Image (tube, rainbow, N blue to C red; front, side, top):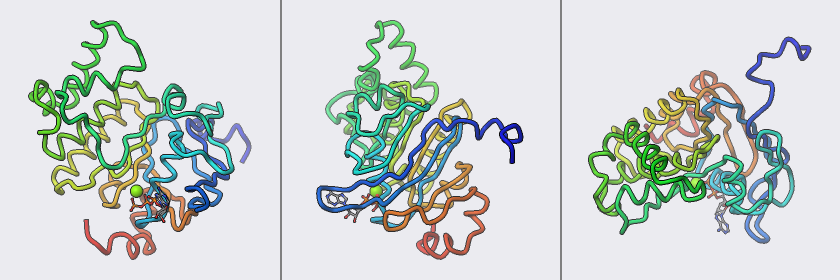
Length: 250
Ligand SMILES: Nc1ncnc2c1ncn2[C@@H]1O[C@H](COP(=O)(O)OP(=O)(O)OP(=O)(O)O)[C@@H](O)[C@H]1O
Ligand SMILES: [Mg+2]
């Protein structure tokens, strides 16, 4: 296919990871990972426990230095940069484990998300209101101490806080970990709404079916390699994925 025949969406990936190797000290976990995420896409990163999903997101976010390979954001290399500089390039990670600042209020937690942007007070307040519009449950609880929120509300808060950093690409590790099924659905509905508003998302998720309702494409990571790269439709139909990941039910 000639360049002129390519759909516009395939032109330039927002995030491009190529030949990425990473790990912890002498323990190599990722072996030559190639993935890309185009602007406006929701991409699911799937795979069994221990496959390396968290390691991949943390390496992209600058928390772990790659052993080899390249990571570019909008064509600019970000591999090996400190997490603050990666965030400055528009890449924000909502980490596994959902860390709110438990002794601060919901409003204070939200404002922490914008600290790097040094917004004037009025602009910051306006951005917080935008977040409350997206997450009405948080608006009702803005003066509440974050540690007293339910698990689902805490997950909403970390996603809302990450939005205050004005990411171009949000990576969410284990979007629904520890949440009841109806709350997990609410989290994914929210991700779908954010994506419809133009946010680009790379998400890992145990409940494959749920992730593939929102994602357009997915990668299956196995033992540190990309095993499958396919559209969400193909992944939904794939026996391989069914057998590997849907056995536990979702
Ligand atoms: N801090 C660490 N030091 C050494 N090895 C680690 C560390 N963190 C993770 N590992 C190892 O790296 C491998 C990949 O782990 P990782 O957390 O990336 O998997 P995952 O796909 O996110 O799994 P899960 O679905 O359980 O979250 C595992 O074998 C794990 O034991
Ligand atoms: Mg993980």
